[in-house]
Length: 220
Picture 1 (tube, rainbow, N blue to C red):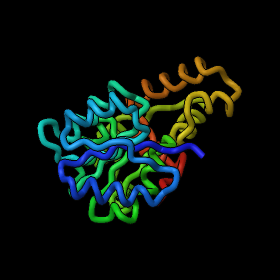
Picture 2 (cartoon, helix red, strand yellow):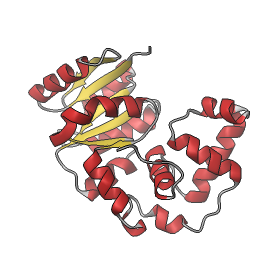
Picture 3 (cartoon, helix red, strand yellow):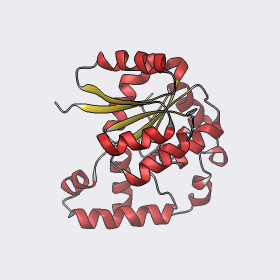
Picture 4 (cartoon, rainbow, N blue to C red):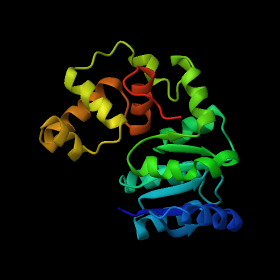
């Protein structure tokens, strides 16, 4: 069983300590570092190469959204999971646009944290259930970045539809190649074509598109 490595980023030492204790209850999760501001979060990600970066939005020096943006750009293999006291649409949209693949509300994090870490480490998107249910009820015009409303008329090829579902289900490019009996290069070509056609360029929003269009179900 592969151990999931986590970097905990929060400006409050007591919060970091509580998160560390909670994460320790899972035998396959290891906290390998902590950070107390946005710049340190980026530096520690560079130094430690964690699988998951658990990031508070309200970070000093460099806020959580900008820290997430830098981490995702420089370390695409690291999955950024936002932990925040805010559950407003604008905060969620900013986080997803920055490349975060998950968003947890602190109020219910105790119930959802371990599952969220496992999900994002596996390549899936994860939102606190209270957020996920609200987002699913929203109309296309109120989706995270409005791109779904602009792309409803887009017609995907059969192969692109297959790739979309596999992305939403958390498959890596290599795993998709195995499932579809295609080379990694060919899968990547279909993936890029899919993103270009939908004008969606991150996994979390592709997953939202797949859920909204009934390709996959969002886990609640």
